[in-house]
Image (cartoon, rainbow, N blue to C red; front, side, top):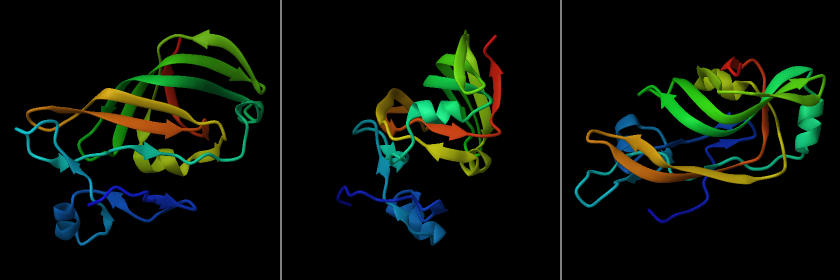
Length: 167
């Protein structure tokens, strides 16, 4: 399949998924062909490629200014997600407390966890500045296949996310 811009979610509605042509045929669900292998001697498996969030209209300062009590986090440093892609837990490199719309103290070892659908349903607003993130260690498969993945994302405000650590 040739590379093309494809929407997985549009106007808040899931309209497609990721998976190989074989997976799409097996499930009878439409999607975006996406099977890749880490090397010539590994089978191609369904996996995420470059997934981006399109920017919204809010400035980061406005997002933070609208939050009475929360945590601002940057740069994931650890990833854990179950095989069904339902439950996840991520650790971040940097966080600050948000109190009355202002960034206050720095928090150590911030983490967050949840379930995928509830997490995305709690997306409140999307900012307009875009940053490119990625990990060279997106691993999947047996034996493990590590493939580089890039994510472009503006700052986002999520409500009702379980945050822990950060003491």
